Length: 113
Image (cartoon, rainbow, N blue to C red; front, side, top):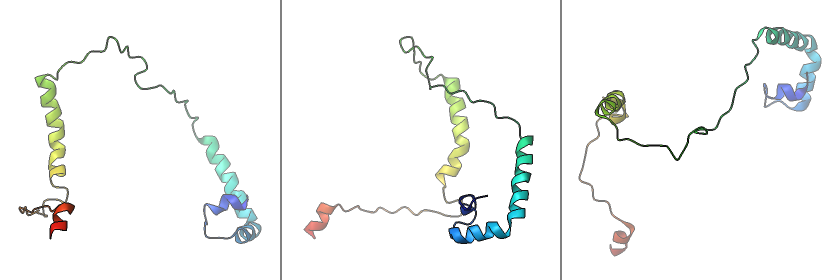
């Protein structure tokens, strides 16, 4: 094992320290590499991932848009209504925001004072 491999494990160690560790613990590191090789041999092979571009099979000339139906709107609202409580109260139910009629002063207004 090389010091570069151990540098990710011990990022604060110097190269000299890592090399010394490797020399003092060569048997342990050999066992670790052998154990990993046995483990890696039992892993299932990764299936290849096919890549496709979004909408690559869409015929843009025949693409149509229809207004959302009443049923679709109800389904949409029912789905997002569940999230609204959380979004309307981002700090939880125990925190209340007091509304005041604050006046926002622009930079131009501050020059006049």
